[in-house]
Image (cartoon, rainbow, N blue to C red; front, side, top):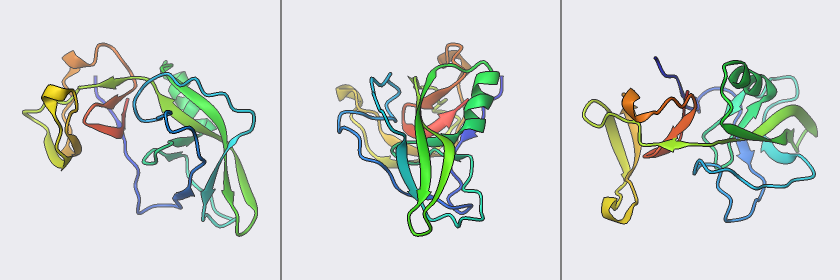
Length: 165
């Protein structure tokens, strides 16, 4: 089985410039189920002009965001280990609002990299004995399928902003 990596192209489109505040103990990047109760959509700011399309996914942020189309693609592919929370993108300068977006929480973090074949750039050293892996950016990521355990969507332990499906 081949894998796809969702990694933000920061040179394309219009990024999210500000994210909503959530409780400090809530993390969208740790791969855990979130007991988050919201009554209004989460508001994410962007500098996208009113006549442009902001994009389908913003996965590099602390709170990942994706369009309804991306959610539907995941579901149609049989992927169900994620949570979504209603969100909107807003350009406050032009008062433009884009609906049909969701804050996205992938449930599952796996130490899936074949460390012998992958090429990494270490961002922050870890403490393996203390249970804290190094934080890395993969120049080349090779997934070890024996470590995935049949999961179709997950974050990689040493690069949790990276979404793999």
